[in-house]
Length: 425
Ligand code: LLP
Image (cartoon, rainbow, N blue to C red; front, side, top):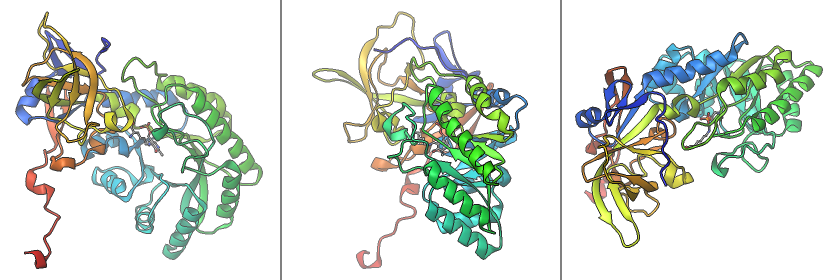
């Protein structure tokens, strides 16, 4: 069943035609082809501003999680709005720098940082490493010592809290690979305090993604609060508390707390500590600001169901295949009174798991355009070239204007880094 859902901020329907801001979506597809990612600049800006407003006068830093959507135009937009960045690789760091982001507002998360990545992060002067193990702390200390620098660090706590989200994106349980428990963290902080090349400046936590409730956040924040108090008792003065990202978005009929609901509850726990608050939102800033446009190539009646085979596939949008994620799919043009049928919307990739949506009631014919909504986060950034499919183009819409922020890949770029050994030539 396809529920009748409101379009997210940044998208409207006028006389049957879908618009992104004031740009007719069909026109964008005609000019730039499909599959095509489109993003509303206004929607991204407003989501970021909602986070900012949520903090009010509390000292804070919003570190956008680059992995959600790492296009440098989007990073630039967020940097201009004052955002910092949460990165998990050297590649993400270079993207932030290429976009003109400020290294001193970058926090570096992730369980497996390579020596080269740590060196580069020290070289450009990032704000803080979110350290996830004793070995990582040792490596950072060694590299900082070699460079004659001091590395600012937080330890990522694993609070053993159930984020009540999909198991693949739940990160705060003790069986997950992330963070360390509070007891171990204390020992690591004590070591860092005594090491001349390490400076413990914060505490950190991230329990999962697409959270729809406030309670798990608060539970983990209480662990952070207790740790900060313990650290202060032992003479380690923590300046910032990073609560991670994870606030969900409405894909279907979920009720999601607002940033201000969440931050008010967080501030009630943490304000008395007088620390700067940090947060690492990704999906909640860009998720609902984007859509993936695709064209129906083939309408196929199977024995038990109808398929609409479209020109976007699991290589363009992996979330449905990987997490059985549900994203709304709407017609780009709706004719009044048009008859709807039930379709599975599937891509051309040779896997049964290649679907964008199942059992959707739509009125489609071959050649029609569909928009997969909620495709601003973890969509292009998780795309691949599987089945030798060039990755889609990306467009940023600003009012009635739009800009190509990534060209469609051309076919020869697919094998440009490959070579045939001489012996085979
Ligand atoms: N901070 C850290 C350390 C993270 O690992 C993540 C996301 C975030 C922040 C941002 O979380 P957000 O605010 O976007 O929920 N591919 C999955 C989501 C994976 C999230 C990974 N970590 C999906 O498509 O649902």
